[in-house]
Image 1 (tube, helix red, strand yellow):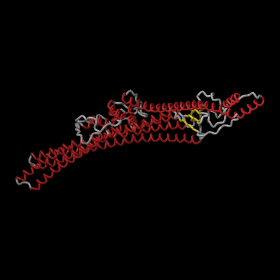
Image 2 (cartoon, rainbow, N blue to C red; image 1 turned 135 degrees about the horizontal axis):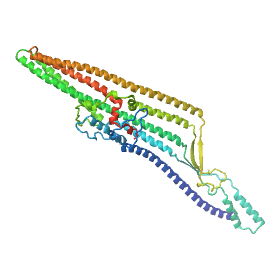
Image 3 (cartoon, rainbow, N blue to C red; image 1 turned 90 degrees about the vertical axis):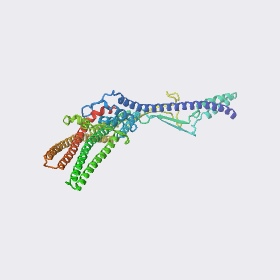
Image 4 (cartoon, rainbow, N blue to C red; image 1 turned 180 degrees about the vertical axis):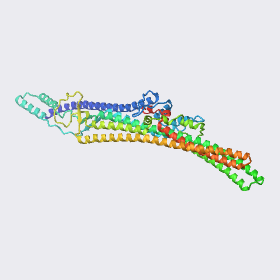
Length: 552
């Protein structure tokens, strides 16, 4: 009887191996499906980031973007001269000195080269790209994170099953009542017992496939917040550009003044040479001393030293101008400084600047407005935290479960879908967070008001400095006019024999010094006017396409 029972058991074992192989094939097919889903999710994430960046680049290159109005101000004009700037900001920094400088370079040419390759713009441009990558990462939150958990059991406990002993008892009872019962009846009974054995073809693993905690509403707020941070980074980049143009204009203005003062120093040297000839002539006639000749030679040396000083100062400022332009220091740059004041200041009139224009062009104010908008989103986000989070998953029946299930009841092979909600009841903490966010929004409103006041106050102070510089300029102009009249008076006295030639020399030196001082006063006035033009946003309207930059 025992030998007869072994043969059907071997047959059952072979059948179990076949069915177990089918389960293993089904398991590996499921793993392959999960891997494809994970790869698709990662690909979608990458496409979301790429798509957003391409849209931004398209707005920069195609100029098809409709520029919105800056919050709290009038729309900003978008001149065509910022196309190169936007392309460089989108594509990253270029090699130093890669842009050709047209010679002689006027102020507009210097600005063009600086916008194309200035090293001052590198850091802020990279910051924009970094923030855009953050937006792409935020878009990936719309795609759930799929997690596959698998547990393999090296050794499983057997379920209790009395089917074999029941079949044996039935066979023994039948053979007692009917001695003609043979071994085939026993094989049939044992086959039926094996069909109901829970240990037959039992899986040695558990599967759990879930999306993890997922809340697309939170993701939407995260994407919106990251976009606001991109706008802040763009405005910071534009602020760096504006300050760079202002620095470029200041250097260009100083170089123009130094070249004019250099010509006056050359006139001083020519005057000192003429004076030396006069003193030598008098000494030859016995009307002057040798000491007078040495003093006259010293004046020539002073004039030459002053010229050298002006040339050195010009070289230093020119090096800084090259740095702002992104031009190597060894490269020679010829500047067109004719009418340099008109090149820098143009037809700018401070009387045409309105409060609305100041607000619209103030970078600190616009950044503060974006920060307030971001804080408003934080308030909505605080309310969203009241909503539950959920996850979707598929779970297999644990192989350690001793209950009996219908294996064909699942539409998905051996996997059962589930939906899980999570709702923490810490409403007191969430209510306090909502209140805190409202307080922060009120603080942002106060900061915007203070920033607006500071913008207006700064412009009024710049106007006061301009008026003071105008007064100093008029006073110095009057003094220079008097000195010019004194030169004419000295010449008349010399021609009439009432004075010596050195009287004309001293009068001319005083007049040339007055003209140099007049240039300094003129430079102070131009610097004050330059500050007003920068604060009013006139440089932005002329050289920076600010509204399109905020959309790339």
